[in-house]
Length: 436
Image 1 (cartoon, one colour):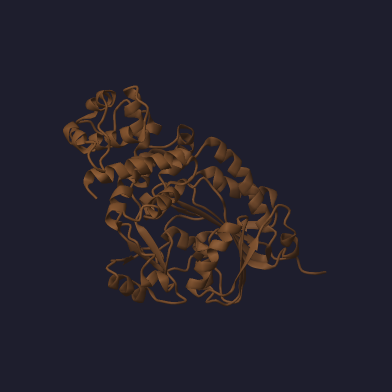
Image 2: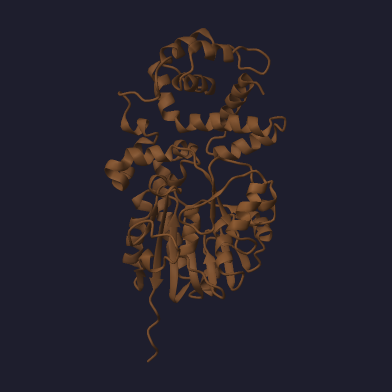
């Protein structure tokens, strides 16, 4: 594809993302390229990089366009992005040439909006803090509570593209063997600093079509997510419930630590997500997992009450810790989402707690940066549920790497740890009182 053709494809993809409403941008992009097989891998990467750069800077781009009284249509957003990253107006006009596979020429009104942007940069002294940080207005006080004076640097790290993290499947391979297998595919991967099962690829690469992935030697999983699975402390022979299992990423990691011995129940409210886990389980060589579709008023909880050694609650959350991978999440997230999620998380936590045997352990995790979904949830749970105590992570951390954060909780951020943003708390249930 010519450079102009790539710009046209980027505009088309932006239009599809905008018209998809609340559907995640990565899902829209996957479908976009699936229906355009003629776009090669290098061109796909170039188009995706261009679009994701716009998503990361969208609030500031819209600020510039609003300043000129213009509607932020996808083609204007792209043209403004080019100018604010150093292109000349002449270069933009030549790219919007209207030639074969090129964007149509810019109109007189579009030119008048864009010309004042030449020689400018994305940031401007008049921008409000939420716009400058590329976050929704309502969430600013929540993030200020979390990060204080470090908010700007934390959000700058969150705005950087994430690397590709992989987890080596200990049931099928070793770190060295998987690293060598990837290198044979032309992919350089280095061990992650915290997880002993992690490999990190500096830039996005298509690993899912290669032998290392197809044979189940590796899985795509952020290092922070791998550490959450470690905190479960699942050992061979245990009974474990993954209460919000989704497509089974943490289920797979837990099965590896259990060496395929014992029993795992992967639970979720979505049959589609649970069905999606089947292929992953087979590829990984995992055969100690049972799937369970949870429903409202699920009697299964009553029948299995106090029968699990470990229960992991990877709760549905705002996903604010994953913004470097999903920058469109900032645009889709509303305050209503947050206010609805907090009580939902509490209900899920209470339901899952019923499954833990006396002396067993409950692990609560989110990929959120917000205190209301994390520390406040644990405080509220302890207040309404007697017989539970927080186990400091220093007491369950058995990895060679040093503890990444102070007790009592696991709190990870891109700036401080190079992972996605994660929170995890380990809770112990008291042993049953001895019989009289």
